[in-house]
Length: 302
Image (cartoon, rainbow, N blue to C red; front, side, top):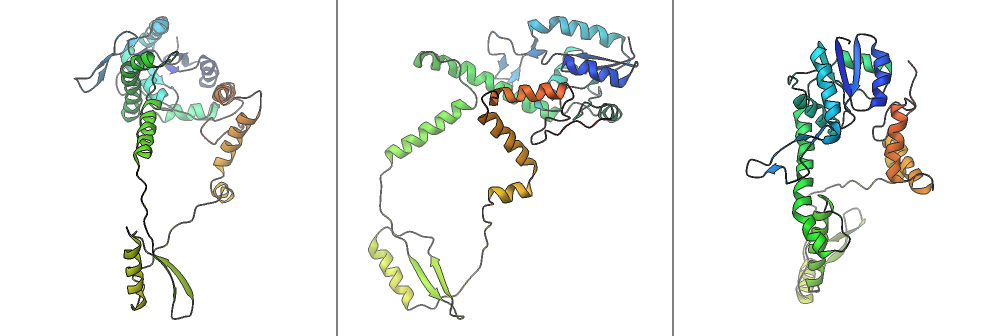
């Protein structure tokens, strides 16, 4: 067993990274998440600041047992899970499940090349608790919404599955807005516009940013303007909306993402749901160097 242990998420990545690092490193995989809240019960102590309870999932007990053996004989452990919110959470769960110290080196990389991996090893950090907390908040809200609202949904809607943390509040907003529209009582208001001529003889169109409840009020105000001398108190400039062409010219990275999405929607053999899986396959097999948003460049050889 090598003196250094590196833990990644994907088994496919583990084999490639181990080749890059050499004989002093052993690379093993957690195969994704290793802990979650229990399937039975809420798993959240609402009265104790929404503290979650975690347990090792049944399908990962052997994986965790193997990692624990490797940790015992390793001199140094590196956590190399993905650099997204889920990856940071997996690294934190590994810390807890494997009884690792909080200052265990955490490394991240954006491409599976020898240069990127060796560079990451020399620039470790620790697990970012803020990102971990963000992931936990998302998971807790998932559980709260699912456990509290899903039973109601099942009683009211035949064939319904489960309530989601996003769809549920959005549905409430839609319903509340629809009620506002239904209960709305239409009423007429009156605006005042004028065409003025400045000292240079130029025509300037102006509009009062106030509505009048009756026509008589609007006419009274308009007539009062005829005998008034007007002046400009201030000038405010507003930004015009960018056209698509201008936006893509200024932000070229978005163009490749837009094309990728368009491709996924217009080709029969590629669907939006399968696109992330396909990109991840290309990434793990080193056919592209990055799957970050807007970046699908080919891998450069070392």
